[in-house]
Length: 106
Image 1 (cartoon, rainbow, N blue to C red):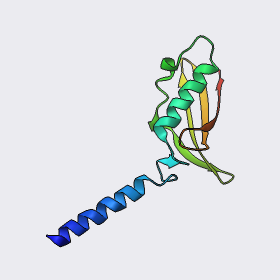
Image 2 (image 1 turned 135 degrees about the vertical axis):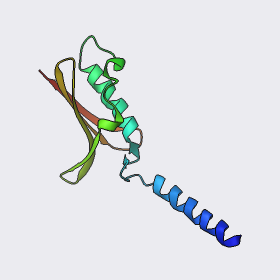
Image 3 (image 1 turned 45 degrees about the vertical axis):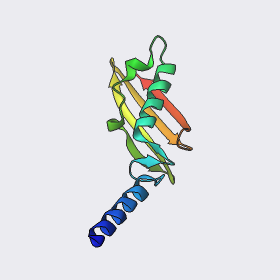
Image 4 (image 1 turned 90 degrees about the vertical axis):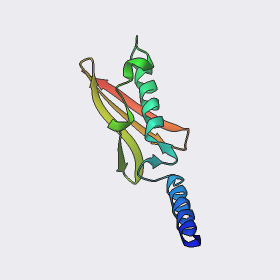
């Protein structure tokens, strides 16, 4: 019984350690894909007159790719919405703060 309990405790500790890594496969500087997707939605809505964040609900976490450019990790998504191609790049500074760049092309 003690052996099983010890293994369970070690496994839970290992899982907890993995999820707290600020730069795991699913996080950059503590920011996860979901938060990065919302920041992209807000940014694209802000640069596209007459739209709201709801118009960009197709910009989701599943489409974000983790990319390292010049030693800096960032989230990037490219897509199409209403005949316009968009690109959005989120470079997390912390869990709740990021530099967001995005643009549309026709």
